Length: 495
Image 1 (cartoon, helix red, strand yellow):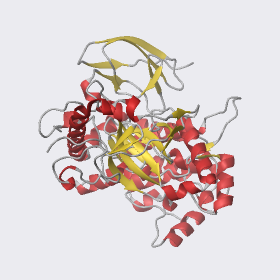
Image 2: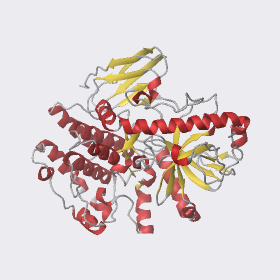
Image 3: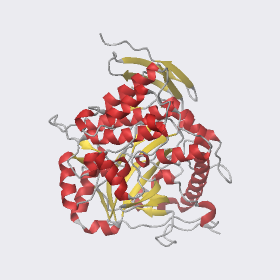
């Protein structure tokens, strides 16, 4: 069968052209949008090697309301400004043929809900304590950054996520935990207006704070309450507020009616129970004042019990329980990209951005208004079910749990090496950092925020580490090709 052209398939087939992207697989459809794994078209050409992205394409019926379009633009602007290791990146809002979409970071991993399910399916009776604490500490670090955002005058803009839940916490194979779906987030004054106008609650009932469930004004401490619910559930194995019906769940949340961790687990550490119960206080003023404060409390408890927290801990458990699943996903996607690259190479100039990206106008906020239509990429010879398995639940929202950095787990292409492949972080020099204390920290490589372990190009680099309560630490590194380097970070406390 000869290679088909880009225009030879019906527009509802996948993979398909969508503006300057190729939609590879549809992960899910929600009440607001469709979620796709995608790649930029130029990345399919032999001269490029591009990363996968996630496209959240808004359902057409929602775009009829101008108020919704305005809300989407505000939310995208909020999310786009957040640059932190523990928050999945949002690249911007785009308009393709009248369909609005948000381009987001693709994370190789699974969401927290699916991670726990994979552990149980593998016979684990409980979530390891070091894993549970490491995950929530990283969630708190991401929240603290978002909550601390200010406008150009230095005034707090009071971002509140409003849907901190296991489905919106992505756990990466690299051990980095990322909060996703800041599309629900609002600056505080937008949040109050939206509740009043729609009369609807945004978020998932079992993880809401009582003030959010009652429709009252909320602030950043509502997100911390939600994080504490996850901490309770991860460390006890019990649901905290989940009732037999939505009404029963809502009633339990509003009344803050729940058991203590030690009621669910008799050997629960009393020091940790004190942390959980404070974070779950009914009154916001009685909770921890910030994500940094809650993260520090978790870190101090871990230190007192000689529990080592961090990305290495999370990465270990991810590879143990989710490695095989991610390797299967990786093999399927790599094969799909190989097929796309072969078809794209055969299509030649038709894939140039000049040909396929016509009509785009870019605003300051990254809102690209395009007159292009969705054109499908040529299909494979094999039936769809042979090459396009359904995506796992855990990839819903920003960070899809498939990808390209799992090659070391044994995934290979079917039918030979690819002409073009997605970039793999495991193929570049790796630098591991040791000696970082528990709690929030900032790692900069050549002045750019990064997450350890670091993947970098060969050559000389400047590494800097900032940890609250310690003097800034820096070191010049010389990295050889295909090398792995262990760096001891020696910190001095501020006196």
